[in-house]
Image 1 (cartoon, one colour):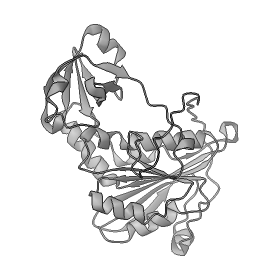
Image 2: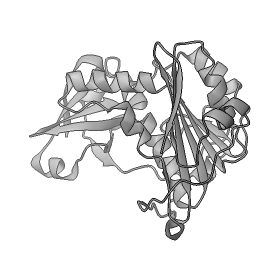
Image 3: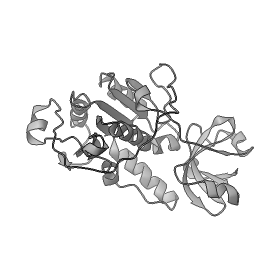
Image 4: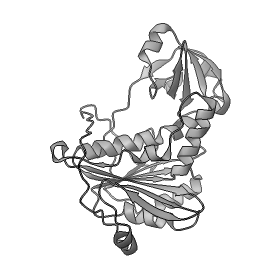
Length: 289
C-alpha cells in the first residue's frame, strides 16, 4: 500500500494491491512509516480512504514514501484505565504513566437484553423525582448553550450508583475541555477520554468508538456503567462533514444511544446507561428505554 493523495480535511487516499484490499475493512487501523496511525473509513477498488490519527498529513511530506501495514486493535482494558484521563488512542493526558496493554483479556459481545427495573440515582432531586433514569436507559440532555446541561451531566457522572463512569469530552476548545475535566473530581471509578477540534480528524472520529468499547467491556463484566458523551452535536456534525466528502452514511444521534442496555442475568446483569448532551434552541431532558 502506498499513499496516493491527500484530500480535503486531510483525508488520505491510499492505493492498495488486491491482496491488501482483501485484508482491509472499515474501522481498521493502519500503521504508516514513522509509527503514525490512520483510520480506514471507506474502501473502493484499489484504494482506501483513511483519516490521520496522530499527525497532520499536510506537514508530513515523508508519509508518501514507504509501505503501510495493518495495525490490529490496541488491547487496552478498562481495568487499567480507572482514574485516568486519556485521548482516543489511550495515550495519557494526565501526566501519569503509560497505560499497560492487556493481551490476555477476551473481548466479549453480549446482546441478550432484559427489562430495565433499577434506577440510577443522580443525587439531583428534580431529576430523580421528575425524570428518573433507569440503569440501561438512553438519556438526551438537550438545550441552548449555558443552560446548566453539564451540571446535570456532572451529577450523573458522580452518581454513587454507577460502578464505572466513562466520560467523553468532545468537540469543545482545549480550555473549555480542561475546565469541564477539572469540574468532574476525577475518581478511581471514572475514566475520561478527551479530544478537541485541534486534534487530527481521525482522532476525533474514533473517540466514540473508543469509549463505547471501554463501556461495553465493563458492562460485559457485570458492572453498572454510565457513559456520558459531551457533546453529541459536535460528533454528529463531524460525521455529516465526512459523509459529504466520502460515500459513507452519516451517523444519527439516535445511533449513539442504541448501545444503552440492561443485560440479562445469564450475561452478567451488567447495565450501560448512555447520556448525551446536545446544543439546540429549547431545553428538554428526555429519557427512553
